[in-house]
Amino acid sequence: MKAAVLTDICQMQVMDVPEPKIEKDTDVLLKVEVVGICGSDLHYYETGRIGRQIIEYPFIIGHECAATVKAIGSSVTRVKVGGQVVVDPAVPCHECDQCKMGRENTCHNVRFLGVPGQGGGCLREYIIMPQECCYPTNKEISLEQAALCEPLSIGVYSAKQANMPENADVAILGQGPIGLSVLLATKVEKVRKIFVTDKIDRRLKAARGVGVTWAGNPDHIDIVSEIMAIEPLGLDVVFECCGQQEALDQAFDILKPGGHLVIVGTPRQDRIWFDVDKFKRKEFSIRYIRRQNHCVQRAIDLIRSRQISVDFMVTHHFPLEQTKKAFDLVAGYRDGVIKAMINVTTLW
Ligand SMILES: [Zn+2]
Ligand SMILES: [Zn+2]
Image (cartoon, rainbow, N blue to C red; front, side, top):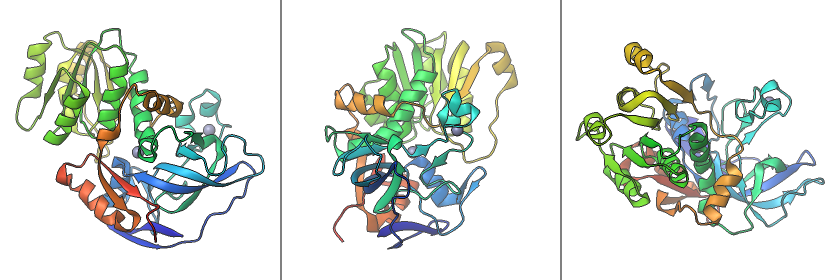
């Protein structure tokens, strides 16, 4: 089968690799249809690592995918051959203390698609996943919508973890696919005002299309003073969705005392900094989001019931053989890209 294989930093080749085989009776052989390119895939592409997870080449990345069931193990009941599924890329162990507490997203032994040392990714024609990771869609949502369920589930989980008070005033700093997913998820909750920022005007435009109180570009205006002019007491919750120190600093300035900072972005550097004086005086709480937990079905339901629309996020489409081109486009933030999709099933 074909796969888009990382061979070095910023190097990717489409080549033949062995097809995976069903080994356990709970395994599902999936034909990968559509793969979304995620910020974390880009980290691996450009730097070869995320924190202590370092790639040994060659390696296949990718974890946001929609697939069709090709074959199933003998005890699989959750999906049927020919059915379409959303893939949850995380396979928890169900044995460790975290899993037993229902915190599978911080499982000590998790295997995640496309993470070095845990398992190859989905930028290839076939993958094997346990049935618990396959969420049938009954073809009620499109394949691209299905591939967007993974980032959307992170937005849903982030909004849930924010413990927003009723009629909260919130800001979402960064309007890439994850920031937009957080926006969509917070819109479903009953929030009062939503402020969003991004350095790319196309993304602000997308956010305005979803519906926000205020959107601003920190390269052009002083977002702290503009937001504080509208909401002088400060905001209840700020979601940091871009992994920038600058945004963390802004969050400290626009949060009200007792406010809640939810960090979703992944910074390039190993350490982030907080202003001790502001931190202490305002008694913030901070939560860092680890992917998502038990929110995939909710993401599917939100799309299926048309409570939210995600189609606007997909700005670019590429066949598998042009995966490198897609990564270079997304890495350069070129052409107003929000989410680029790889269509794995184009005819060979
Ligand atoms: Zn992702
Ligand atoms: Zn576990």
